[in-house]
Length: 239
Image (cartoon, rainbow, N blue to C red; front, side, top):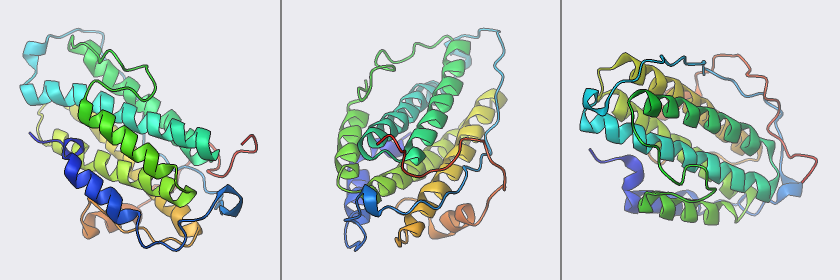
């Protein structure tokens, strides 16, 4: 099964599309508008059973999906860590923390099914998958151009996560895997809303690159109205 992130040509083209023709793309950190919105969260804590199963309990798609998703969540985490260090916006710090939680959830599945986690999992900006490595390099380069570019990178990452997770959910019949992936997808929808909101506050209307207009609008127009207590998205005073 083809994974969205592995379609590198499409992703790079998408990057080129969203980073062109925007009059607000030259905003720097001093010109950034913070809309002071809390992060709404549909994420829940997922408990993993201590019963270890074997990889023979998994289909190849399920096995590949689990190992791929832990690196995909790492990619989001590492890109946001890089962009936070560069721009000092707490939206990146907050969502980076959420991505670490997502990685831990997938690691729970890796442990449960006796899989071996990627050796580079705790090395910042380093990936075993060469396509993800190239994508990390491309996204951090684009996100370094301006704050608006950085926020668009975030939105594109979350669009991709949603598509990949939906595909993996549809290709498993195991409730524990579905629960973890659904939780991650809800988080990605929430993060997408956050990035789009920040762009809107800076006068930039984000258009979906990978999601259909209908699905994108349904996500943006839906909010659970709760906060995860992680605070505001704005520029950190320490940067």
